[in-house]
Length: 128
Ligand SMILES: [Zn+2]
Image (cartoon, rainbow, N blue to C red; front, side, top):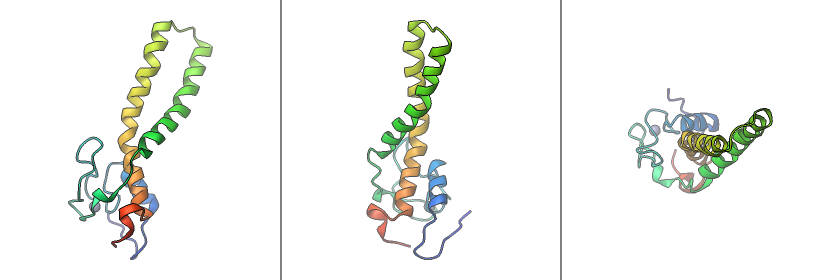
């Protein structure tokens, strides 16, 4: 599982994929998140310090960006084809948006942390 790159190199693709899956972007050998959106302080498998990340609002921004590009075209297409009652429109789309946002936020945050780690951003500049 651990495809260790040469010293100094960090594989962006595997870091992004591991982060998306909620695994440690550095080794993939343990979970990245201790709670829903709270990364563990250190990876129990490789010891990487995850308190160094600075994902901030980027995951929420990306979720809104992706959600808007997926859900709005579906909303428009459905409403052009079907005459939904107002109560259904008013509950279906916000409900779907909430469910999709909750489903996407942890994987997107994992990918953002993986990106920062692979690109040695913020506190990830040092180390192996
Ligand atoms: Zn690890």
